Length: 155
Image (cartoon, rainbow, N blue to C red; front, side, top):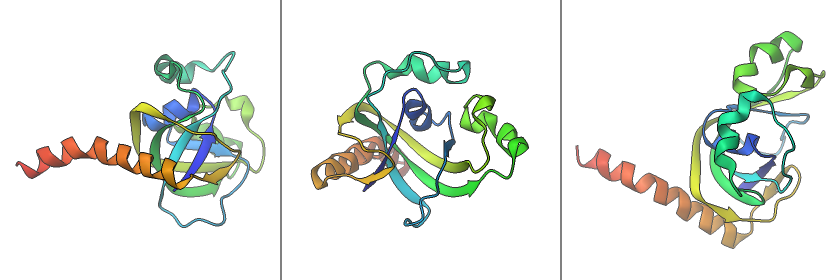
């Protein structure tokens, strides 16, 4: 399983489903989409953040340097222009001042937040989880799905 390091509170916003576009300067050429990706919260503690991510910041707590959940990377595209970036602001939650030519929109869906974060050393960009970490993430996903699947099967 692969993971993507994202700074808090944006990592939390992704797994809560509040942020459906992650803004990056590069395209992940070597992966097929859609693809489930573990969301790793980086260790950096933010000094400030835009009001658009206040709700996520309230849920961060000590969730740094760990896998906070998963989301499915559905699509990746370059923003056509500043207007395209501005029109997607409610999805990426970044300040409009961040705009620069060449930015990419990583479209996420099917987000799942882990109540118990999984300790993990992150890396820049996409990175492969160690086998043991991947197994723990897969078990956490199964734990989140199990109650819902049982209730659906009881109907």
